[in-house]
Length: 418
Image (cartoon, rainbow, N blue to C red; front, side, top):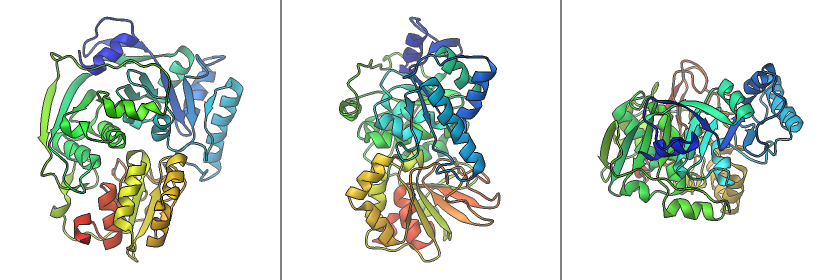
């Protein structure tokens, strides 16, 4: 079996499972945010449930429209707060104490290899970087799991993606996943597990691995997953004392497809609107003026992303016709960025630094685009109207490309800065 199949088999108390089978599996951890969890709470009450299945295996994290953008957002967050209090849920994290859910939970050791994780947000797949099965679900499924501790799933088939070679300068995990989605399309892994492997992946930091798994859903994937190794274990060493089980795919595991890539000549990638699959190398892009740059989100708001952005921006200025917005993914990342002087670099360059929020990524607030405006973003989606007006445009790129574009006032790679 593949690593995904082994985890699912264990969680439904079976020796094996096969792609296409329907199972009911036990959940190790589940979570929701200020958009999705209120709907789950409504259903929870509608079904007459009295209490959640486990006070410690549920997290509620307001992170989308926070700090509250308006009265409706405030009411949504209030639903979470009151429910957590009534149920005595231990893992409710108020604004200023957490950050973006998909970055905060692994940072604090809630996610372990071999776990089965569900979250009422499509980018729950991020957490597969730790060797867990992690997948987004709807609010109704979240409600059912809050009551029963179980989730209903169809076992996905698995595609394996093997990356070979060393990444060239300025090329990152974001470029790997954009290039991959550009190759297979936004439905190329529809309801399949995307298993990432190869020497290139083994040399990625945990942050890079999170970025890789984060956008599995943009290829239609059910989950992204990476086999745990010494990088994983080192990441977990200071974050948890709990025991966990490490799974790996069998040598004879069956894959729906195996794709191999030599990345030694890969250049920074940019996805054109309105799909993450419309990808070009940055050197192939003609002069394209921009109005806004967004660096952050659950995809690229990690400390390493901020460090990379600061390398590009240090001693330079954001173009006078561009606004640059930077969003650390968690409070801890923000604090460390301050200690390292990164925030000072950003402010001196003319950028704005915000508290952790998903706001600009989904066009919620703190970065909404007007008609005809163009943005380069390190986020994960560039659908029509994703960040604001239906006639605005979003180009997806790495933090290095986003920072260089902020300086040049057009889509540009960091190599252009000398």
